[in-house]
Amino acid sequence: MRTILPASLAAAVAIVTACSGVREKSFEKDVEAYREEVGNVGLAVAVVKDGEIVYHKQFGVKNLQTQEPIAEDDLFRIASISKSFSATSIMQLKEKGLVTLDTDVSSLAGFPIRNPRYPEKVITLEMLLSHTSSLNDSEGYFTLDAINPATNPDWANCYNEYAPGEGYEYCNLNFNLVGSFIEKLSGERFDQYVVNHILRPLGIEGGYCVDSLDARKFVSLYNYRDGQYVEEPEAYEPRSERIAAYRFGYDTPVFSPTGGMKISALGLARYMMMHMGWGTAPDGTRIIGEEDARSMQTERSAPEHYGLALEHDFDRIPGVELVGHTGSAYGLRSAMFWAPDRSFGLVCISSGSYEEYDSDNSQILNEVLKRLYKHFCN
Image (cartoon, rainbow, N blue to C red; front, side, top):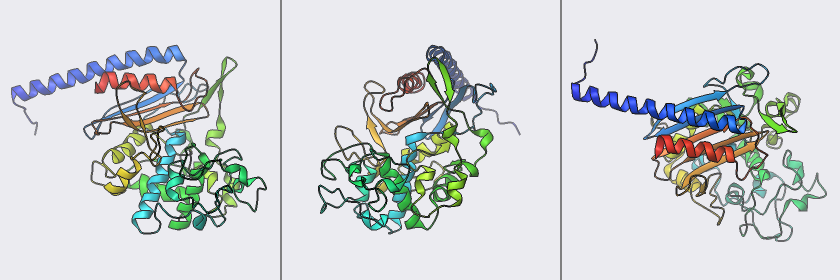
């Protein structure tokens, strides 16, 4: 039976719908002009307001050769936003009593993790998650051999001159170590743990293991070099041979806990809504408790304003404080940010443009986020 609304309510609904349509058309005209200006290959965005995804859209193509348009369930490798999935997993294991943020990570690694300048200073899990561990990526981070004294004679180069807990340096090795700890604590392979305990409960398609995903959905990533786009197939390299010889709790960097999540913009928005809800999704699915969700969003360092795989940003949208994370790799730029009062959240993923590689301050992210805010949230 058709529901007939009172005339006043029907009119109000019609006005809201019309306004929404105007906003969408205005944004799309604005962003298409900007995409042309910066040579954007592909773009996917989503806007969350009042606990709902009120807008999502894909622009451009998923592959320059095939010219196939991006679909809403197509998957991007989102780079460093992946770190928040690792931190969320640790919080779940913490809630099970298997670890604390003060845990000495040497007890988890199976080899000593100590800054040789401060051998008595314990490096904790919290320090890894907040990039205050004094570790750096100078010896690489694609294998734990880099920091293992038994496998790298130059292991001491992995540590900075300042004491653990007394400085900040963004470090991918921190989170590849964390991924190996998740395996040891949970008894599940890292990629499978994240799927089983975060993605699947939230109804999200995605993951870290290429062979477990539908490769037809991968959005190709492009760097712009010498006046042309260069596809970066390594972004979706399956590394099947390395996984076949996998050493549990040690070879975890093959999945890149620090940057290897593949997910759609719509899926990332659903994940973001869980963090906006202090660990609970709009349908009531709890992933982590409120206390731990707040802890992840609490700054541990200044002036970086970094928490546990989430940061506070004050510059991308002038006059607006945001919480979230960005990603940058293989030509991709990604952003997941929301307002601390949870009134809105924004997701933006670009698969390539004329922009030079700059992980700290991507103009395409800044400009698209500003436009999303202007048209949907201001």
